[in-house]
Length: 289
Image (tube, rainbow, N blue to C red):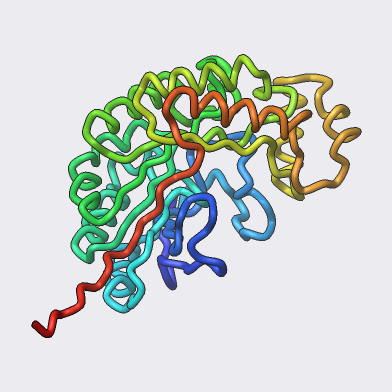
């Protein structure tokens, strides 16, 4: 673990807001991630993180964030959780995410937090304050089985802990939901797993659910993922190689059918399969009379 100086802290997406999460600005307060999910796309070469296990703390993140928030003319949703988890274990002591949320609240920006960690519940007070503008919290859950989550997401809280966090957020009045992303071919792509996640998420009070029926595979990320498959799921790598080759997107078998069933199940339980995005307030016109 080391401290580094960042050049900037908010990066604007090219086609903002993005169609999945409604995010316009990405915010990453750390580099690397302690959750060490075996499938994480952030290991890809394009992100230029040589050692993903070495956590780098952006020491000047908060001062940069305040300066950048003051300069932004467009008040649009800030997303956190794209390159790493904003609530990985180091956050418990460092509190970069909590203090960033305080600045976001002070400058009246909307926020969308994406996490696998129950630590997000610590910041319910800040999230409720920001919700006067817009707050969304998405909890990623890829398996209904705690024992499997320990294998594929070894540094993250297990699924049952995430569901408890989801329930706490929902009961606090926070707009929240679940992301089943990724769905791993031949591992988590069973109808039983998807149904169990949906049912438990509905019970916990999720407002929405979204799923990506597959996993990305490229360069270093693919190599790392295949190493873990060899260790925990012997014989699965040849199956991946035969089916996906050098494809970037590895969709599960019958992805269309599974997506359709997922959508129907969510809707039957009162959950949306798309998020509600931040909507800027409409300027009020002055009356001449």
